[in-house]
Length: 118
Image (tube, rainbow, N blue to C red; front, side, top):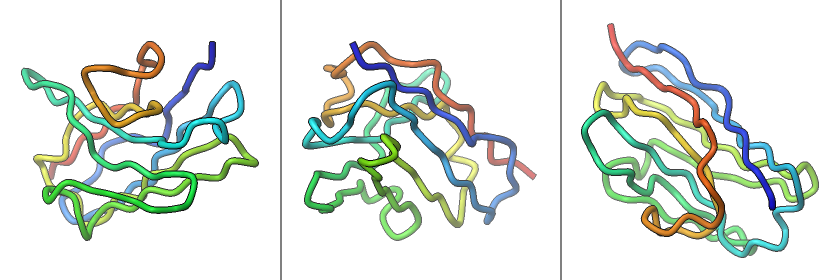
């Protein structure tokens, strides 16, 4: 079963940027949709962005225009470029295939913590 390992999180000031990476233990080309999710303390996990194998992307209004998802099937990696970060973006970020946070494709990894604070 494929596993995903997220990295790139950290502490950043409001307005700053981070680039998250999601490395897969196996090929991601087989997964039509790859996505990033996040879970803030006391809140449900939510979809942040998804991308299909054709490169089509989709974002919720809360991050559209600030976040950009990309994938490199050859490197078995999915990325999330986050710009203009806000305190409300603080959460643990996860990746998985599919776009339903209630039905992950595989068990969730450990995620990477993103904290936006001055």
